[in-house]
Image 1: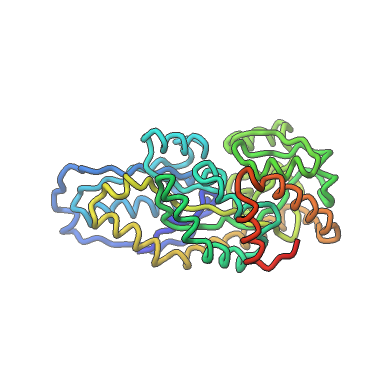
Image 2: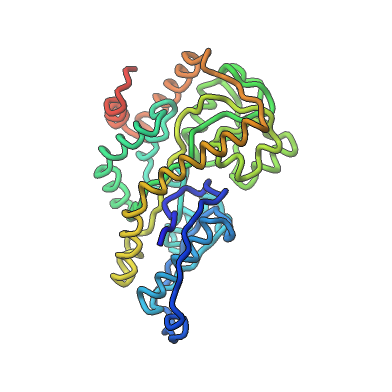
Length: 339
């Protein structure tokens, strides 16, 4: 069975997930009352492919454990934004979640080196960095009390606006959204000399409607999935950094599950990680193509040096605060950049 549990919350447009059949005998047998409950949160709606995949996992876990494990899902952001979800995990109200770098950074700030502005700009570079830093990053999550089940990507970062954004200076005349709890996004906006509007993710659409916000920095998957594009006019090209995220579960809660359930969750993640990572990237490409038919593309390549200068200032601003300078230097070494 295939289930994209390793995709970020932004993957709302849906992926084709293969079906899974169960025998009538399995349905007919009475199952005991569950003795374990695993509570997970995602922004994906229940009826999306990702939401359906969670329901499929719920059935599988029941089968694997003869009804001992009950998976309780909180779909569509009903558990709150990522800051709220992280807080609920810490106090024991949730056991795990699919998080973007905003939520992951609240758990392990050092992981935000992967989201440092302008540092990692291609999928091959991201793959290489995550592969080489895997032991270090996984150990950091372990120390924080979480199991990093699998990584995921939600597409390349672009600037979407009601205005034409070609040069960093153009950001000074607009009202860009800053995701509450995202220090990397805030650092980028500040390095550009702009004044951002801090809001939670669920507030963005209404802010675009009222004009409180007129510019968002996100992936095409997010913009199309949340219908933000209906209130925007332009999008930049080429894509920049990559929106990273991961599927995490509290370590003590995972270890408390029956071995059959624990092994199934981890094995499935390992078997399908590459498949669904590539699927997420393809989905972003398709979303970008769809948006180019609805929004005007603005090429920012001619001002590449100006954008790189802002990105460099932003990530240096964060070095020593979120991630160490030595960790940033290590990532620079891996991707072969010379700053």
